[in-house]
Length: 465
Image 1 (cartoon, rainbow, N blue to C red):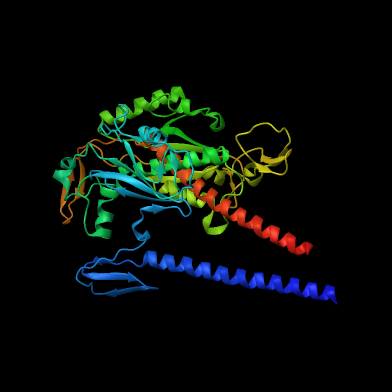
Image 2 (cartoon, one colour):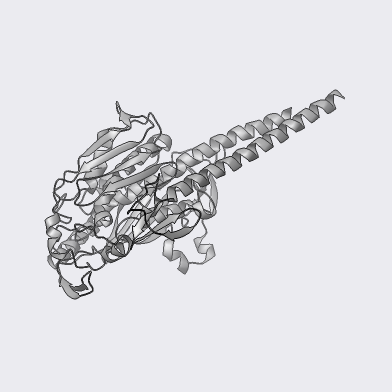
């Protein structure tokens, strides 16, 4: 009889936990949905009408030109990430640009130099093959850091635009620049940022690089992770014989084009300089490798790690294509050639790839890495290898045919200080976006695994009662 009573009590407890857990999950989903709806509940005036989202789009008259604000208006696309979330602000020829970082853990050692080092790799005027715009790009940390330690509160970093020249754009404010966002932004906003393209300018990426510096610091301390990128090709000049696993930051930074192959780097620099003298521009490919990344980051279906990486990379100005692992080359391979064969590593030696740890003496690794470090949307402990193809800079010094905003044919020959090739300065941008995605998933997975451990312990305790 006593045993029956104890079994009944245990059964009731389990049912109670199940019911409480179910209602907690429903409440959490409701809260998340409410936040999303609140975030999207914004309105703006378009052609004398107001669009609102309240469970559906409705059309109505604006109230005195009112434009409602919201917590996070995702339709404007200035925020990125979930657990580790950034919002960039500013325009190319405005007062300043910067970023607000939300979700950074407290007590992270962080100095101004950590951020400034990355911004210096991205700033203009650093060599003869990039934009001659003279900007110091000195970072200012406004909040979230005290005594070189993060407080766990939002971190705001800004950079003042000291060499802005909006007058360079005065002669073609009414002309649509070929391959720029002028036409599409005009369709969306009914107004143009008349100098430098506004938010479409690559100067917006200062905020990304500043946030990326914080993300890199988190990866280094939390899991020994490192993210490095380099220029793999410029035009038809390709770096040869590079082993991504052996490339070092010193090799990359040894020349202004940021290519670890010295011979290819010389040819790339010559190509850029010739293109610049011709008043034209040239594109290329950046490869980026993240090592020391633990297995288990990412999720199936819509939140796959490679899907978020693709979105992050494709959000970078001038990016036209994304690859991970074997990329497009996989389409020309057969399964037996493309499959990454597993093996058990019992050497116990240090490895830049963490693999999938079985126990203290054995780790599951793969002989090849065609997957690029991600299987089924989840990291497998191998190096994450991605590539980004960047187009030639849209602004060139050659006359081109175009039209005005009033639909009149005209010609355009822009002036200004533009990169003949964006790749050398885009390397830290690509690195930053990769680091931001991985840290975002690392924080999510840490929370998930911690909760899973708690629930697993509860299940084990119930089994022993």
